[in-house]
Image (tube, one colour):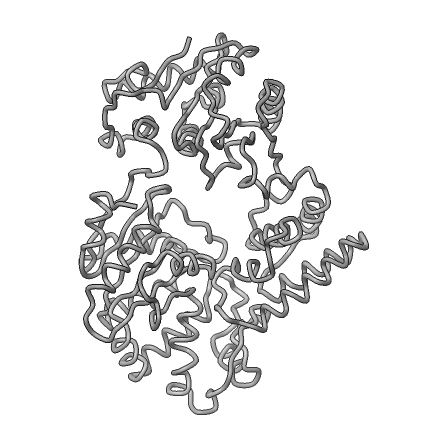
Length: 504
């Protein structure tokens, strides 16, 4: 991939740099390009540290790097704190009694910092606070770093730059450590994130820290707002929705990528199908599951193999254990998904922790046995046990939802979207996905509020090369959409016919 002007500018900017990167703007590509550039222009023995929230994200960075990563640290927040600071230097601060092997067990809860220190000495366990808004690992790491001259010299001698991904999800203790490394040790720091996308608020994520760095005088600032997923015309349409991106509008001659389909409720399928490329992935995105299901059936009747993707029972779970329910479901539904994949999705887990991996394998074996025997109670107990071991809490209702998700095959399609050519689902379920062609309905978005505009933006930006917006005649909600989109476009002195093809 070529670099855009802003990406090239980010890659070549020296010193401390914070990048605010909206969804779809090529954040990971830019981060990797920045690392390659910095490594190739570093002529000393020093290396870099790329710090992520999951092992999975770290592996993605390693796979994308086109340079030798030997000697460089590429891993999770916890791995960095534990392997680079706590294990090698704890004895310098707390004495030789702490020159011990350590493993993590976040199910062991403590109330005070002193309790945590004692657990390391007596049990060789790195544990976690009862209060999940506090981070024992990073509080300990910062204390060691402040008190150990050897640790400070080690980091300064080894690293010439630190890269921190998804910074909006850092908690206060993580932030304090990274800013100490940057401000006190004077190790250049590259930070990328987006406060609008913070997903770890439940465990103390502090997006205000990210916004605060934007005001630090020792950091350069850059902003990435251009969506590289979609073609220029779809970008134009999505950028015109918001005041701060309207200046990104670039006139194009070919308006065939955004099509307004004016139709009745009965004939919208016949109007669209001649223009759908069946060889490319496509999606019908509706506001409700019922409309998505009905639409899928209509498209199927027309001869196109559309598959309805139902809302899975665990989809609405928003507790801290939500990732675990999803990972367990994938393990039992997807043949290629292994215990290693599940381990890699644990937020902040240290890479190479064999104890946790073995515990996961054992738990999955027992869960499989419970499913075979249709022993729901045993299944719930096993989920609760592995969750507790990893430092999470479950709810019986959520365990029941997980059991249903795995046992009822109608939900399995939701985990196999990549294997399907044409799908129908709610636009809420489409977050994080992309398709060559997308069909949406004007009546699903009134555009009367910011939230409605955000919803419309999410749906629109799933499309890469073709966007169909179905306008149903005599539908009051579609009329409301038409009135409001025209008002929005008028702010840029544009009309719909200037940015889209209108098919009457």
